[in-house]
Length: 119
Image (cartoon, rainbow, N blue to C red):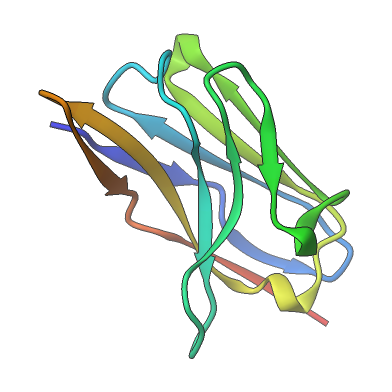
């Protein structure tokens, strides 16, 4: 069974930093587009960043230059380093893993971790 465990959220002042971690219960070595989404109150869930199996990142325009996504295949973990945080970054952050079993790809989600940025 695929499980994702997130950690690292919290409360931080504007301009501060946080690092999110997402540990998967399965090997992520061949997983493409594993990443992070976020959902602010009253808004739709949106992509923050994802990373290919080869390590190439993709970022939402709103976080480019401030956030960095990385992966450690040996630990089956994806990280999101968030710097220069802004109040607009306040949201619940979800780890996402597209996982294929018997030829069918399903989207798996973590439980979410709250990030709150105060002004």
